[in-house]
Image 1 (cartoon, chains in turn brown, cyan):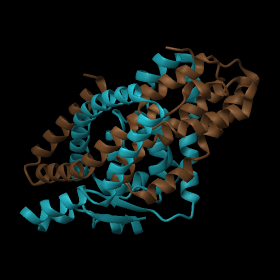
Image 2 (image 1 turned 90 degrees about the vertical axis):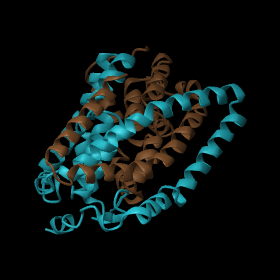
Image 3 (image 1 turned 180 degrees about the horizontal axis):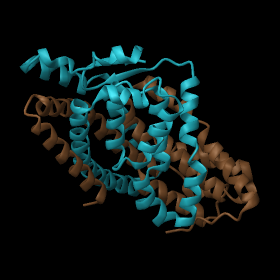
Image 4 (image 1 turned 180 degrees about the vertical axis):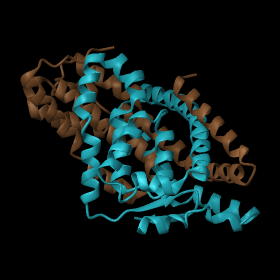
Length: 172
Length: 208
């Protein structure tokens, strides 16, 4: 049992108690809305979760790591940002891959670009949550708006590296 | 204020329908066309995994998939309960003035801060965002919220970033990324793109 799920159920409990305390239709309407969203989401989510596990196996992490060293500078940032897009999996897999990159000598700006890129593009979240809950037009708008941020993050990292020694990403 | 007027129509729309027709239309939507797209996606990726990486990797993927589904379902149930209850109880007028279309730069800052402190995984963040969107949140604020939650979410940093990458690296990344959600929100406000939010709970679209 993780802290996250405890917090989530705690919040659900408090909110349901609040809704019940209003002594009107609030609780029933809230429950109904929850059920509606769950039934729309659950079948899609199930398929997307299954797909994510398989796609994660298809990513050649060790191979990519060779191109992320600090001597590669901006190129490493771009490759790292592009790689981040392709990780359709949660933090367990994404951070394991980041740790593999770090041990293989990836530069700090490249690691920052990789994690930023994964965190905003994570394809499993897009398919499981974003498209069913918000729709394609929001996805389009968001992707265009955040598209540059991994590269901006990497560039800020490179610039900071000119003035300060950046801490190395350590492996697990 | 355009957002203010669309807002008042956002009450649950299916209230009139009861019994069979409600269940029928709900089930039609939950197993609609996009669902079959997901099924095909899963089959294609499974086949590719088996063919390209081999049977052993395939078995490992199946194992981690089962664990993932078992781990996720209870979270989704809790997140949907949270989102559903917030949906009916949220003071939407107050929210619109905080992060609605006229909230300006402060709206982006508020949304980005909310993203940092939102606990829980994507099930919580996305369902909350859907509620905010339906309640009239501005597009820049929505983008800033999600960017901030995904890049700077404090829970993931504590649970994953620090143990796996080290505290110094995590802090560096946090500081480097700090301005980016606001930047993304500003870009989103400038983009001449249409935004029509789906609303899976009410079978309609919120044009923005």
